[in-house]
Every structure is written in C-alpha cells, then in structure tokens.
Length: 124
Image (cartoon, rainbow, N blue to C red; front, side, top):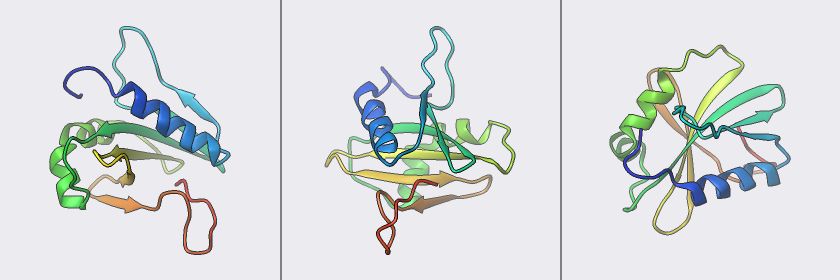
C-alpha cells in the first residue's frame, strides 16, 4: 500500500475527527493482515471505509491526488462494495490541513470537511 510505516498519528487524528462529529469509528488494526483501509465510520446507516494518507508536498487538486495516492485509490477500488458502503481517502498535507475524497469506481471527488454551507456536519 504505502511505503514505510503507516501514518499512525494521522490515522488517529482522522479517527478523532470523525468521532467528534458523532460517528462511531471502528479501527481496522490487525496484526499480520494488511487491509486497504485504516478505519471504518458508521454514519446514518452507511458504512465508510477510510484510507489515510500523509503527503509531503501540497497538491490537493483531484488530478494531483490521483497521481500521489494512486496505490491507495486502486486498493480501495478493489474492495467489492454495495450501495451502502462507500470508500474515502483522507489526506493530510504538510500544512496539517485535511482534505477528503470519495473514491468512486471511475473517479475521485472531493468532499467537504467539517461543515457544509448551512453549518451542518458532513461525513459522507
């Protein structure tokens, strides 16, 4: 999946962020088994599989993320999922800001972070 060690601190931050929005979070830490996602969010009847990636260099446009996170996106797409399961990529850059993307079968779309225009929380 990724080179080197998993971004443990970033994964923890992403899990806390999701939990602070009121969503149950299930860590996907297993010994000896490499999963294509780092944790699972349950949000209003939907299951969201989340992969976390830290980037060394800023570049958050969809085209940039598709190149820099190609392996993670391919691994998420390889998971068979029905309509109630979605796949997301949460990216933290060198500026420590988070950017979130939904990984669809043929595309990647950026999604909101903590709130939408009306101030409501946005997870998936």
